[in-house]
Length: 89
Ligand code: C2E
Ligand code: C2E
Image (cartoon, rainbow, N blue to C red):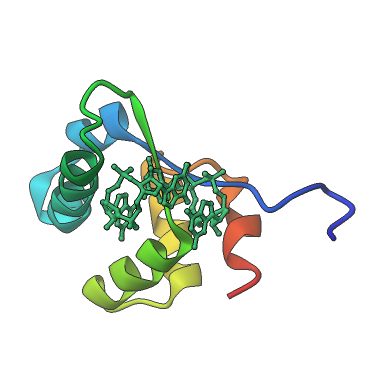
């Protein structure tokens, strides 16, 4: 167990995501919309995703999970805490 506590969740800021240009955010926005639809969860301002899903998204964006995480933090879609969630990859 980490001295910093449990592995943080990957929490997508859906409002921030909507503000981003489509060419950047499009694939992530579609992925998030699919998860919302599968869960029947449409009202949240945030969406917790699976670690597995970040792996899939990294393939989609042709980046490593670490690189994609850094980009999503830069966009303001992920909290910097998310770095610790991908350390275990
Ligand atoms: P599933 O994977 O068979 O999960 C069935 C139900 O188990 C989910 O229904 C949810 O109530 C619960 N569950 C599974 N994993 C977790 C978890 O890590 N945390 C929590 N809190 N509950 C969990 P739900 O939410 O209605 O989702 C229905 C189906 O939609 C899921 O079936 C899965 O196939 C898909 N799905 C939902 N969310 C995600 C996601 O974030 N990523 C992926 N890849 N698929 C998802
Ligand atoms: P959480 O619900 O707090 O779950 C934390 C971790 O516990 C999950 O990390 C997963 O490793 C494990 N876990 C929880 N429920 C299940 C389950 O039913 N089956 C399995 N195989 N593992 C489970 P993970 O996968 O990275 O998910 C992170 C967060 O994403 C979850 O936190 C939850 O908030 C959300 N999530 C993931 N899948 C679903 C889903 O199918 N439905 C819903 N509603 N939320 C989900």
